[in-house]
Structures are given as structure tokens and as C-alpha cells.
Length: 444
Image 1 (cartoon, rainbow, N blue to C red):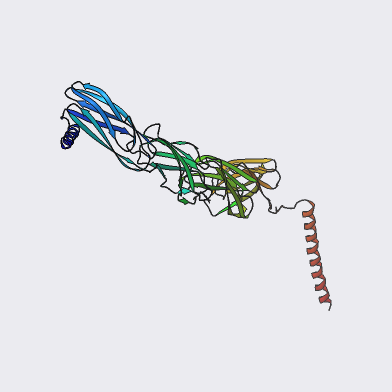
Image 2 (cartoon, rainbow, N blue to C red):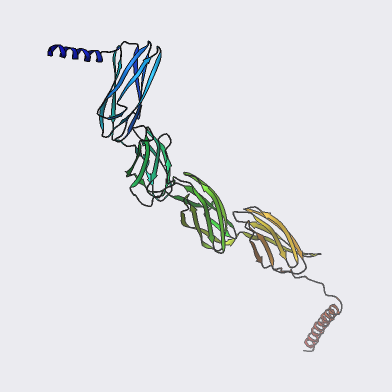
């Protein structure tokens, strides 16, 4: 009797576990595909049949919490139809878990096996490029994840902009101004697959740092020397070697009583801007030019750079008077000569003045000259006035001397008669003296 009962039970189990005919199939979909500890896994069991099939029940066999665990009274599925059963699993610890789903029908049992891999691997922020000290960094990062992380939010736990970063396609960026190397902490929030699986944790990163190359200011002039009253073209080239754009670039040039400010709106990374500031040649010798460069970064931090540059100034002025010629004519005294420009820049409004007379020349190019011709009634100092390209007015003067040749005139009138009389008397005296000497000799 006992043997008969045991054989019957074995037969029932074999019948229950025997596969159904090929017309019945089952598929399972679920999310997240890689759950984290504490996650819910939501799945759907779909049973399809090509012929009418009566399903008596469905059971889940697993050590995980599952809902529902058993379903009965499903009924008969028509031909070419399907039946879907949503279910939920709750996972706790990392590991691989097997879920067996038994589908009982009048023709046998269909078994569907599901293996869940529960991992303890949170998404990680990866920063590949070094961060530059003492400048604004646009730090790009990648979020690497083996889980189905959705709606990832990264919150820098230090001064950065923005303070909340929504990660798009695993990529993110923030602005950061480090003054010294430091460890960076981030709070990462996300959902693993479904809204019930919210996660939040802190990640610490030790990024690589490098020093800022800053701003380079190059100063030069076209020539090694200049003359007094000339204009010095000061070439200023500002090169941005930083990794960020700089703004409100202000260049101040000061020499003597002269000052000039030049503004540049912005300079992009690895770009440069060149300007020319015309400075006056004030005094002979070494003239010092002081240049101050100021600029801002996108955070409003202010930077200042100081540079000094010296130029050799010769003692002679750019404009000279030469080849003077002075002659008297029927109209007065005529003065002619040359006015030369020995400087490196043009001179303007050149005017020659003598007394109340003036002669306008105008513009003289560098290393060129022009002539003038003035007729005056009386001699006086000769003056030349001009302007440089900065509008500064200068004057030179030259003392003019005129030496007249002595004029020989014939004497007439009483003076001539007197000379004739004296000459006649002198002749008569000589004649009388000769006669007296002759008579005295005869007497002896």
C-alpha cells in the first residue's frame, strides 16, 4: 500500500513538472536589469499560446520577497492570445538570485527561470583633465554606471556653479575656481530603473591640479632710439594663456605727465590682442614708460600685472632749421632756408615766423624737409612751431645775423679842392727849395 501511494505521488509530480506542448510560451521583462541592494524589481510575465490553453495557476519560487507569489483561477486562453502578469521583487543584499516561475496548465507545466544579479556598485564621477589653479575652470566630468541610473543629479559640496547639475547622457560640467589643491566631494542622487529605487551617496575625488599660465604682456617699439618731441609707438600684445576667457581688460600707460587707457572687452583662451599706444618723447636720456594691465575672470576676480619699459631719447629735437640764406633786396631782408623732420613720425602744422611775418609749410614726413622764404623789414629771431600726432605743440628758434658789405663812395666838392691846393703848394715848395740850393752852390 505504501509503495502504491509513493508511486502515485511521483507520478503526480512528474505530470505537474512535465513540459507543456510547444504552443505555449512565456517571456519575462523586468527593470532595473541590474538592481542595487534595497531596490524593487518590477517585472511582467507574458504567456502566449497558439491554441486554446487552460492555465490553472502560476507560482514564483525564490528566496526573495515577491508579490504576488501565487496566482490561480486564470482560466482558458483563446488561440493566438496572451496573458500578462505584473510582479514585484524586493532585493536586499548583493549576489545572484534565481527566480523560477511555474505556469500550470491542463497539458503540463511550463517553467521560466530568471537570474537577478544584485550589485553594490554606485555610479562614479570621473574627471580626466587636470584642474588649473587660480583661474576659472570649466570642469567636464563623466558619470560611469553599470546600473540603470536615471535622472542623475550631481551636487558639488564646495563652491561651484551651478550648485545642482543635471547629468545629460552621462555628461556634466561645472565652473570652479581653486586657489589651492583640494579634495572634492560630490553628492550624487539618482533612480535605479524606477521611481521607488531612489539612491543618494557622497563621492570623494582627488583630482590632478596644474598651475595657471596666466596672461603674458609683451612690450616693444619699432626703433631703438627717438628724438625729443617725437612720438613713440608702443606695441602692446596681450596673450591669454589661461584656459578661460578674461574680461574687461584695461591697459594703462603712463610716462611723465602723459597717460593713456585702452580697454579690450574680452580675450578668449589661447588668443591674443595687439594694440599700439602713441607716447610722447618727453626728455632726453632713458625715458621710463609704466604699463599696468588689469582684467577680470567670469567669477569677477580681479588680476593686476605691472610692467616697466624704457626708451632711449636723443637730446636733439625732431625739427631743425638749416641752409639759411639772408639777402637784402628792394623789398627788405629776404630769409630762405630748410625745415627738416629728423624724427620717426610726421609733424603737422609746421609754421616759420620772423617778426610779424609767417610762412606756413604744413605736414612734413619723417626724414623729409621743406623750404621757406620770408621777407622782413628788420631782423629778428627765426621761430618754427609744429605739432606731433598727439597734438602737442613745440617751438624752436634760431638767431639770425646779417653782415652787410662796406660800400665805397667817391669824394667830391670842397674836399677835392682842398686836396688839389695842398698838392700844388707842396709842389711849389719843392721847386723853391731846389732853386735855393742851386743859388747857394753858385755863390761858393
